Amino acid sequence: MSNSTTEHENLHLVQYLKKIMVDWQLSPEQLAKIGHVSTEVLNQHFALSSAQLDEMPSMPLGLESAVPLVSIYKNLNRMVPTSEKQNEWLVSPHELFEGNKPIEVMAMSPQHLMWVSYTLESSALNRI
Image 1: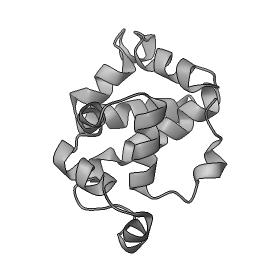
Image 2: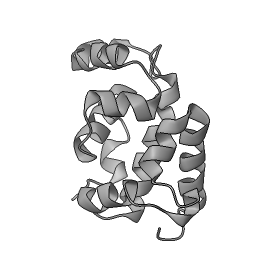
Image 3: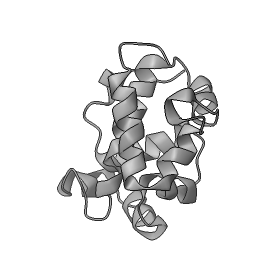
């Protein structure tokens, strides 16, 4: 089962991205694709220690476009009870996205990633 969002409020963006990768069972390449960041930059940040992350800005250079993933992750945690159900939702065609799979929509462009984020935020009061 996914942990509640409040348990992760103080995570650094890089720590959120690691959690998303694990919970959604993504490879670094898949995460880079849906986050619209380079795999090389993502792996460089993943190699940093917690102490090094503490010294970095909350939005490290090269990871700016991945920020909407955190919003998507938080909203899915609120709406869908388990990582398994989140993964099922991510890879199933959905009417909210014109019959497309949310994970494929996220990978289309940074604007599409923001669209998924906005749609989930707007739907936060309703179960998806």
